[in-house]
Length: 247
Image (cartoon, rainbow, N blue to C red):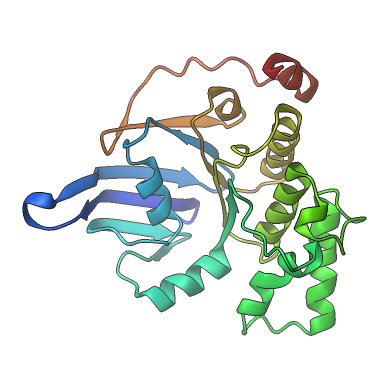
C-alpha cells in the first residue's frame, strides 16, 4: 500500500452465520481510495454497502482478506484496538445525527477528545478546539444549544464538527442527508464539498442519486461485489439549483 492510499481492501469477504445459514455479505471486494478523494458508495438494499461501511469504519472485521487504513493493517485487530483506531482516524457522520440529547452542541463535539486519553490537551485547549470546529460549520452562535433546540440541518452540522475534532484521516458519512429536508440536504452537501476542497477524504454511503453526484466518483455495489456501471452523472448542481430541483 502506498502512503497516498487512505483505504485499501484486498479480496475482502464477510460471512455471517454458520453452516447452511451462512450468508456472504461481501465477496472478494477490492477497493482503493486515495487521500483527498470524495467517494459515494451506492447500491440497493442487500447489496453489501452497509457491511462495507462497517468494515471501512472499523466497526467490524472481515472474515477473509486485508484492510489497511492510512497505512495500518487493521484486519485482525481486536475490539479495543479497533475502537482506538476509530477514535483517532475516522470521523463519523450518521443519518440520525447520534447526538447526546442532554448535552449542548459544545459538549457533543468535545466527546471524541474526552474518549482519547492520550491527546495531551488541557480542558481549556479541548474546549477551544471544539469551539473552532463549531465555528467552522457555521454554528459559533449555537454552542450552548441542546439538540432539541436545533434544526435537523444544524444537528448534522454539530455531528460534522464532532467528526472533525480529532483531525481524522477519513470522514465516513452514512446517509448524511437521509433525515433532512431539501434545503438542509443541499446545505450539508455544500459543507461536505467545502471540506473535500480543503483536502478531506470523504466516503459517503447514499441511495440518493442527486446526493451522490456531489462526489468525485461513484462506486456501485450489487450482491456483495463492486460492479462497473457507466458513470452517467450530471454536472454537480449549485446549491440554489439543487434546492429548486428537489422541490
